[in-house]
View 1 (cartoon, rainbow over the protein chains, first blue to last red):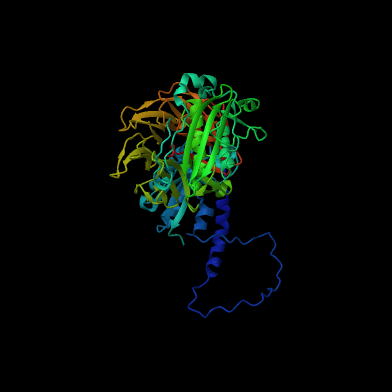
View 2 (cartoon, rainbow over the protein chains, first blue to last red):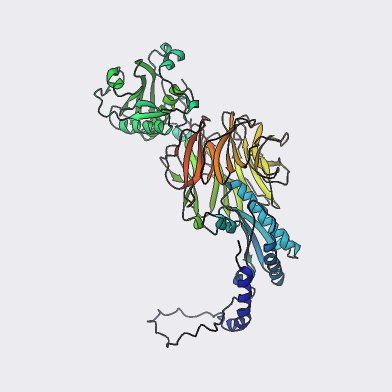
Length: 185
Length: 441
């Protein structure tokens, strides 16, 4: 099972450098107190501009340090083998990148959610999901992320991400998700 | 006779259940049961044909016989016949049936009755169970209750008939707590729910705003325990069904799950996860002191007490993959009882103590099975894409479980311990994690 997260991440990074400045500048400024907004008038159509040629799209990449930045550029999930909870070699680059990102944004707090496929009973899978979440937690702590920033939870088989019934779907559903709970921009 | 006349709590309206057996002494078990009997351990190769005409007296008469008929039919041991056209109308329960009429239907047993409503609205139901060929009365009982409890009267009669004809206790005057499901596989909503064993009176106990799992009844049948799972963590709750009061068993550092009452209702066994390792704890509900009773770094979960409360069966992957183990309630004397190939989980000790039911996963399929408490005589009763989580009827002869199809539809099913009588439960909504109550009193 290979989500091509690495490639997606690289592509996103390329666009990101160019896009982030512009995106920052266009951030809405906080507005002061203001009078009640009048009822919206009929929308007026903006002047027509032809869409840019798809040759060189301007990638509106997510702002660094945001949840989207983490999800798109780092990757929030790593995957496990059936009934296993050791970190696979293909998960290590993702988790290493997660740790680096978390070390760069020390205000961020995360919850690792362990998940299991449906090929197990409910209670056993809760325990299995907890093992997976903890394995990810230990990896991140080993990479210098403070344990106090990381909580863990197991959803067992209650939160599949692929509704299918074959090995491909089950492989996706055996995962641990690093969910940002606080401190992101 | 085993009828109890005492109903506590909201059912106090039940009056005594007087026994009006006509010359019961004449029916020494060897005589009466020589004619018709149902051998439950053979799983009724052919169900017993029974006639259950509408009880006379109007009102709830027809409803009551219909509920009895549904109960007996779903047990798989009885085949209620269509007897609407039988000439003998049985208007007076104190008059002997015209047996040739009933023999002609092929019915081996006849259940007739009469409903009378008192001036104060009290419902009185008299019924008789007859052996149509030996022309003997096998049971004659009277129940009185408030009018709105008519379904429970029907369940009590079903239990009495079942016991008289099988020699095993009935399980019809019971309830089932379960998880009602809605939404797609990727957006499942789970609500705690309760219903009568025949699917009647379903009621939600939670609103679906958080995940609920694995409810279980206490032996008092008035209290349940279950697990709730929210993004902020898991909790084990105790809910009193009479008062609707809900409380947690307290805070633990990691996940808490898989709660189950001890047979006397004084303790709850459950799993606590810490640093990825799940162990079994037992909490004394009075003192709220909990004791960790397994320490193995493996997954230890799904604890279930033996009926005498002295032992706990659980599943553990300490041997490499999930298998069943028994230990003393203090955690000593652990020994493995399952040795077949595949993974064994969710062991549940029968209320009679003779069998342990479990889920087994092998060859890409799931099975509900039973084995003796020493691990012997393993029998797989079902096979499907995903069967799990058996719960025992209080007579220890029938199991209910969840069956989920590949498309994610989960339904409740029942199977008897021979495996021959496998059928959908009466409740046909999407549901999982059933737990059978003890017999109500």
